Each structure stands twice: as C-alpha cells, then as structure tokens.
Image 1 (cartoon, rainbow, N blue to C red):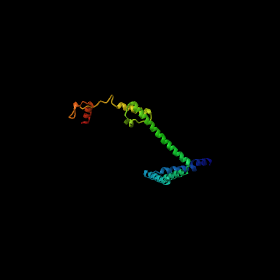
Image 2: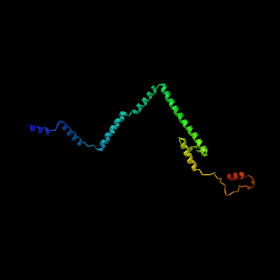
Image 3: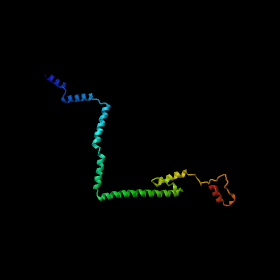
Length: 171
C-alpha cells in the first residue's frame, strides 16, 4: 500500500499547482479588444486628471505663500541678482559695440555696417567683417559719367565741377 500511496501523492497536484493552473486558464481565456484597452486608458487618464487637475492652481498658491514668507533680505537679494544680470547684459552689449567700432575702423567699413557685424567675440566680429570686405568691389569706386551730354550741358561755363554737378542733377 505504500507504493500506491506514494503514486497517488505524486499524481495529485499540490494546492499551489492547482492555483497556478486555474490562473493560467483564466489568463488564457481573457483577451482584450483595442476598443476596450482604449477605453481603459481613457478612464485612467480621466481619473489622473481629476486627481491632479488643480495642480497648477495649487502650485501658484504655493508660490504666492512662499513669496509672502520671504524675508526682506531674500527679496533684496533677488532684486540685486536681477540687476546684476541686467548690468552684465549691458556691459556685454557695450563691449560688442566697442569691438564693432574697432573692426570697422580696421577694415575701413562705414558705420552702417554695424548691423552686419554680429558676434559675441572679437574674432566672430572680425570674421563677419572679413566676409563683408570680400564681397565689396576692389579698388576705388569709379564715377558714372553719362555718354550723352544732353541739352543742359554747358561747356563754356569754365568750372568743371559745376558742369559735372549740372550733368548729375540734370540742371
């Protein structure tokens, strides 16, 4: 009888095995459609929004309370930091303007070229100036003299500059 009892015990599943078998059967039987999963996700999203929907409002209230609790020293330190940041920005802009003027003078560029001379370092501004100079025509600008002297030309006036001005203005 001992052999039969041993065989019966070996063949009979333990309570843990029975639970695993039932759970596996339940999982195998459940399948979800895409609509069901989508609805489930929408429900969870709505629950989270309901739970944390007033987060921004609470955050603003907390900032207001913290600001009210700040000491005068903390407020003064914040104002000082903001002012120092402004001063640094102005100093940076003034330095860049000085560099632009220096580079303009070096390269012989007009003041109107400042808008094209951008950069945060002297080297960057010089590179822009070099690029600008390379685009300009080489040599002095030649005057445009009309080939037709027209009706207003007066060769006997004696003054070359007056004649040229008359030609250019048409008078």
